[in-house]
Length: 160
Image 1: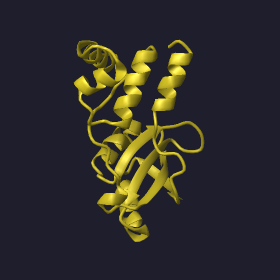
Image 2 (image 1 turned 45 degrees about the horizontal axis):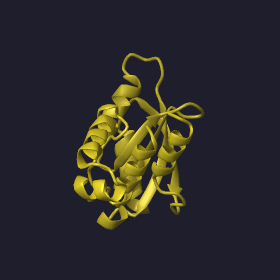
Image 3 (image 1 turned 60 degrees about the vertical axis):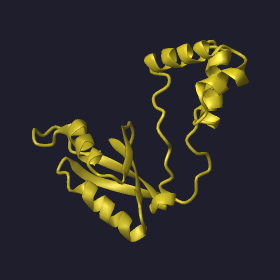
């Protein structure tokens, strides 16, 4: 990535509906250059999507929580992380999940319509026999939303 890539990523992150032609005008580079760079960044896995970002709150899911899951280890019927991840992917309220180090084995970010509905979501998660137990932390407020533009700037400064 270079400075032009970083500026282009910032522009599209700020205004995702902006067209390639308008981006080329604002960046002062040819439309073909913008398109070629976008294609290159997408092919390299730097740009991973162009879909709309949704607000769970705006569509009726104002409660966000993080579940720390402890996965049954070593038994043939547990299925491990992949089986648990497959189960979680079938629950719409599970927004993402990560295998982790530390006290638990996996973190899942979930949303719910209310605190009472959060119990329903947790119960759906715990149906999977490969999960021994979970602990839940409810998010009270978003202090820093998901962001990548500062990371793109830092990558350019570091010569990545």
